[in-house]
Image (cartoon, rainbow, N blue to C red; front, top):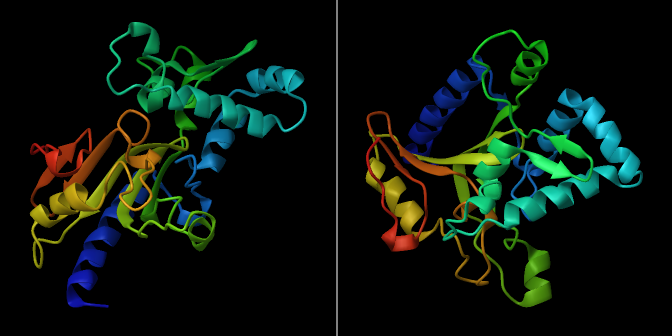
Length: 245
């Protein structure tokens, strides 16, 4: 391992340690589902643990393969996100829409996230808030097209780019972070990575990378050093705009 990588790894490990102290769970890439851009276990775990009555109603409608039916409905809601839509009827679509407005499936309603309650008068709301699963996954290879199987099937294979840290709330991606240690590399190198290699559409296969797709994937992308932080809400290759935070 190069000295640059070693210094960056120390910086990354410090961030991970501090986030874990504050309640974040450490995840692994093998639990991340590349084809859906979901940390599926946390999606199902949060819903089933915090909304048992709604889950029971849902399972009566879908008694077999209930979990897969739920994920399919969630994906439908996520994938309806239109980056250019202004219609208020579409506000419940995409990652932010699902986190804000939840999911309605037949006679069941589900929350995918519980915001901090303004008071403690409702014990159910407070309990659900405490069960939010905030997870960080380091060194995430995110592309579903970066596999030998995809190469055999299509003749094309994406590069196995890794993102330093990806953050999830109850299994839905909310942020990506590229880290640079100012001792060896400036934060500009992280911005350059987003503009040149962390692209919303894979250049080799021409297919969308859901994790990096505006409104459908992570809500924000951070370029981070010890002294500077820049963020972008929409990745667009060389046209990506990174204002300082």
